Length: 257
Ligand code: GLY
Image (cartoon, rainbow, N blue to C red; front, side):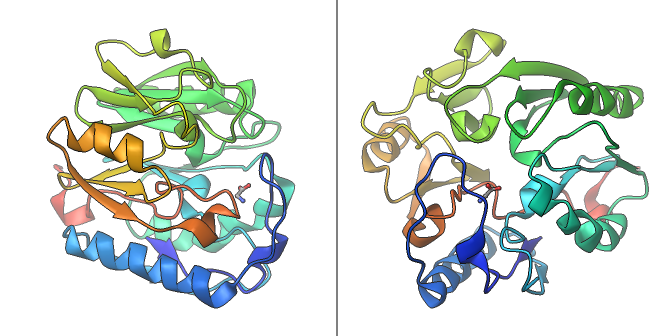
């Protein structure tokens, strides 16, 4: 699931980046190229319509967590983003029978949730609080998932600091997250000149890496990964990463009963 870039993108939330001029058409072309890359990777893409008054609505990853057996609608820490949840709720209900909701005072954003097998590592960030993490843990436990909180600092979300380009392999910025928090994984650090490079998207055997992180991309290619470099420079002005612009899930017909 992806959502068309909002015409109000220039009013997006910014936590660590300075506000800059946006070229909306360029941002939309980059988003379309991202969607095309997903399709090339074999993803069946549902494009949700633009939400003109919700600047960050294209970052669909943050408003829902879709696991094989259930989905959780989040409660974003950013107030301006809370109306995005109701907009995506019918679409999420269409792909998962069991749908839960994070309630006040909990806050949680999907960018803070890194799934590795049956473990959900959840970043304690400016957007996700302890109550949100507790609620998530209670919701997923009956389905056999364990939640492990992780401290993050200096970045927006957990997945700004660490993602999994391949099974058993993590790409991380050790300055933003404590690598020792992750069990049974080999950690590849981002190149020191590319602190934001850890947010890569692994999809169907390919790894999408931001073109702004060539040295980190080389590091992953050198390990035999099928790396695709994607220019998301205009979207990065809105603190976009590669994961946050889509909500990836196993199609309902492919989920084991
Ligand atoms: N601009 C993305 C976010 O702050 O949620």
